[in-house]
Amino acid sequence: MNNGLEASKLEPEMTRAAGTPCERLRAVEARMARAANAAGRTAETVRLLAVSKTFGAAAVRDMAACGQREFGESYLQEALDKQGQLADLPLVWHFIGPIQSNKTRAIAENFSWVHGVDRLKVAERLSVQRPAGLPPLQVCIELNVSGEASKGGVSAAGLPALADAVSNLPGLQLRGLMAIPAPTVDTRAQRVAFRRVREALDDLIVRGHALDTLSMGMSADLEAAIQEGATIVRIGTALFGERTRKHA
Ligand SMILES: *Cc1c(COP(=O)(O)O)cnc(C)c1O
Image (cartoon, rainbow, N blue to C red; front, side, top):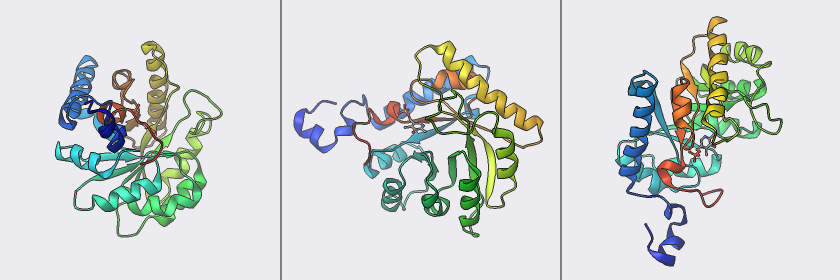
């Protein structure tokens, strides 16, 4: 899609995405199905979360028209604006960004899932602030799998205690783990990191937690993630194109 300067001014975020939205969605689904097959899994065991951050409501609407229902957002105000514009659609919204304590109420009120829980204070606030009329907020704890101090996520050492505490909060349902390993093109290194997340989930299950979700894998490493057991892949670039700005 190269309509020159005028088009790139109107929709800068779409200029590098090849194909129509439905073609891109089908291509990602095909990648997921191939990866699942290669891992001896059925395609239905892996869900696609379309990461629409920085893209406008129109791009989400286009993707929804292709059959995509679940969307992930990282920036609260941007997400709330989009939800308002798309309230006529039966979409399921996941908050996947870093969570500031002063934003927990709006997250608890407006999302079905939260993937980046990494400390108890935030979990407690989300639980208390989850409206009583809604089902519990579906939660993944973010595991800091690459051990980078600057990144979000609980350490492997801190995970069991956090999982025990989160699973006791009435407004939340702990579903599993989320991770964002350090990016690498080395597929073996990708798999090592994802395997650690899966092993951490298995450890929690052995400790008595009923968990079914591994949220891991993005546009560049979804195959490795599925190979290692991902049940939700979070895909932005491969669906919507390169992000050319931070916020919509
Ligand atoms: C942006 C983002 C993604 C999507 O990444 P792509 O490489 O564009 O597929 C997935 N997960 C999280 C937490 C993100 O912030």
